[in-house]
Image 1 (spheres, rainbow, N blue to C red):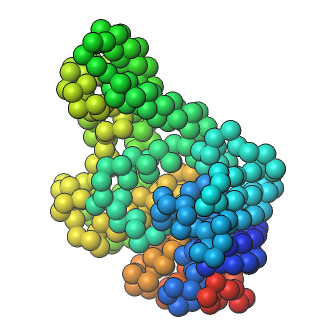
Image 2: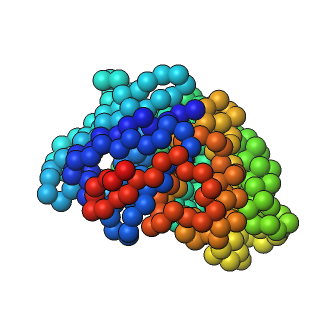
Image 3: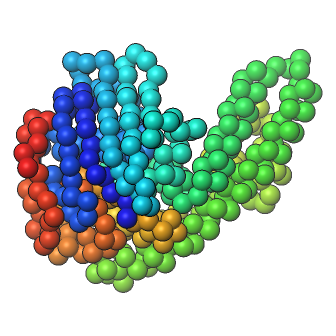
Length: 359
């Protein structure tokens, strides 16, 4: 079971200096009024474990307005190992991450080391938002379950960056040279992209039946829930790249490939993105996350750290209890304005007030 033993923060958002020690097992409830720093505290845990925020891609907002740098240190237990994780976020310098005093080869290596899943109100965008949200979700799952998938995803990103640079440098005078170069990059993208798609499809094949089972339990409905892969092309990827080459050169984009694909979510035979109610969309997003927690426990053989950011306030007592029952037993860090109804057993309660802890 993965768990956060302690987290030390300095100038992370509104947390000027604090030491947070959650319960190693069970639920730690972080309670306080809105705007006091509950979500910021969960965000710091996520950042330390992943190297990014679950709320924003802008790093400057993570640093307290009165400082140029935020410093984080955590002790995390994973697979009978103690990991000392350090991170610094700077407004002016390069960010830094260390695991046991050594920098990871790539920031994505963090996700392969520390299993963690966050739930937040913004998870609604997993269903109703753009395709990139769903691609990121499934790719993050692949990275957490396989280091080779992290390497593969980095390779696909690198190939796409090279193709983009090639398109932007293309001129009429060197058309033949551009074509030769694209032949090489098409082959690379066809091989790596096809393998990434295969892994995504395989992961969804495991995820779909579990998500449907959990949806029935949480919603108390028998509607079918289907989660499938929607490709941006038909036939072999290499052929699709060749067919789209002329238009891609003109538009300076790669219009087909794994970076253009989508995950299709269908509820009761209707596309959930357009036809499901907001409540149904939210339930779907939560059961997908819960299913991923269970698969992480099965595939990675480690129960993930789970962050629940103020999501139980939107559920009644029975559904709050049901959602917690869907998540594997392990360390759960939960934020709320008050201890939610339906939460029967809490290992520890801490109060937050203006970036300070009490308890």
